[in-house]
Amino acid sequence: MLKLNLPCALSLSRLVLLPILFWLVLAGHTWFFFAAYLVLGSTDFFDALLARRFNQVTPYGKIYDSVSDLFFYIASAWFLWHLFPEVVTANIVFLWGFFILLGLSFAISGYLFKKPVMMHTRLLRLPDSAGIFFFRLNLVGKNNAL
Image (cartoon, rainbow, N blue to C red; front, side, top):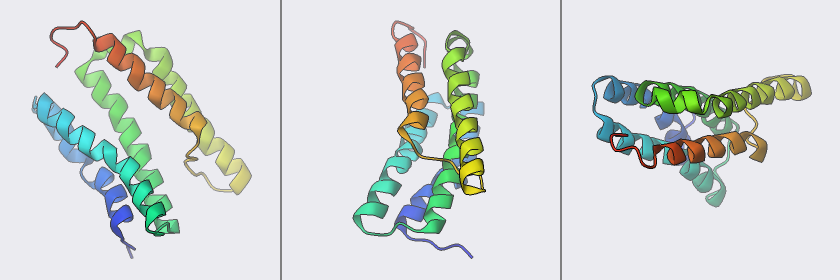
């Protein structure tokens, strides 16, 4: 049975609405995709903020957030590859770095806690942030990036 509060609903919205992002990309609605991606991506920030501020941190919420994050990260890599294959190729090291750290996160948590968990650490967020930074850097000067 789903235990939902607002932060949990925000986390699950990333997972449930992800197919719409795929449809927008495949249908060629790039601007709508970017707007929807920013909205869905921001739920990762707001679910944690609201859960902590209103004391609604729950074990279910942590699971929903981790699962949604995992699918959103993997989908983000596909979106980048589909929309900007030349940028992905130029930054393949950062993409591999991110997925290696993501895999290590599961391996280490599996060893330490006897179950794989997405560990929300600064180390895991570093390649994510670096990848976004270098992706944007590569788009500077491209006339037809969108």
